[in-house]
Length: 503
Image 1 (cartoon, rainbow, N blue to C red):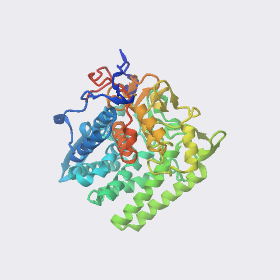
Image 2: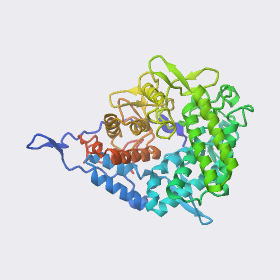
Image 3: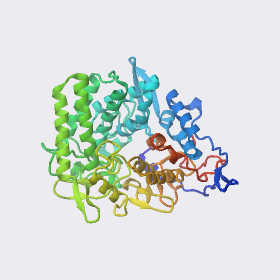
């Protein structure tokens, strides 16, 4: 099914969830203690799970046993393994691991999503050889996809399958490509994954001739989209009434003045950019090109390709330093979201990642960077047209899901990039109280009524929530011990309505 169909379907409730007001009992000392809570089983049964990891199960058991907030523990048990439980197709080809990872409710593999979905499992590969091989398989599968078409964002497992978008998209659609939206971050995420895999495991097996060909294609594509030599080979138009799916000026986007930045015709949300120099994605590219250079040198002893990647990174960083900031009348010097090199800029942020808010999470800037901190204040204010504050929660949304829809991913990023325990605790509480009784994350939810949400099965958001819980568990476990009455009645069965899967 088309992604837009999921966005258009809101899971509107017939009845509100029951709050477990009896979840706490007064002790003689006057303090509140939680009663024993049991939550409905919503995770896939063992026999239905796509992949079983001993290390992941051990991590789940450890967290469940050692935190007092049993609702967060229940959500962690559901969300952290969701990618492995429901989205991976792991096999071997010619004796080498091959892993196809769907995004969830859409049977296609995004370069971005697949990288992010398995990212939190990398530290566990030291104690789980099969998990290590599964991630190696993701890297190998991504290499093939990039070689097939470095401008595409999503692919099919079947190299002969023709996309439904073939009928509506005016671009060079090849068999095996699900969607051909050019997004800079689509080529950054595979580098991030490969680099972390290599640094964690020391294994160089997946970095063969295919990987080298894929990385050559990455650098070539980035250079083409700097547009020093013209608009380049990519253009995209779609026959649609959705404005954010169309690209103006014959499919090349609004004009830019070449300055070293890389054009991204689409955002991570798969919406078209207004100005093609997308600042968070360019920061991401600049930092990952440094990692790529290190890999060329250390693994292949290829000084020439390492220099090419490092020089390109330097060009992008220089352009970011010269052009990416503006002076806001309230927040001072801050990063724009998009620019065009002519002096025009777009101020906003989007719930998907990379975003301005998420840049420290991706290693693009330091969390302490003053310009980032100013930017963060802007992003989390009502000056940001896509920051929504309602009865249920507050957070960043996206044009992709229209107005008044908050992205759990953005709440997670807020928590992951904060050093303030109160802010982190607030993010945890908002996530705990807005999952609409499902025990899982969604793409977005209404700021006043979380039961009105989009995407019933969004594995990246689920796994990212698990990563957030693990980070808090390691750094400030006390925040996971704070207990409030459950947001979903512990004795209730999982809510069943259109828009919700019960895993």
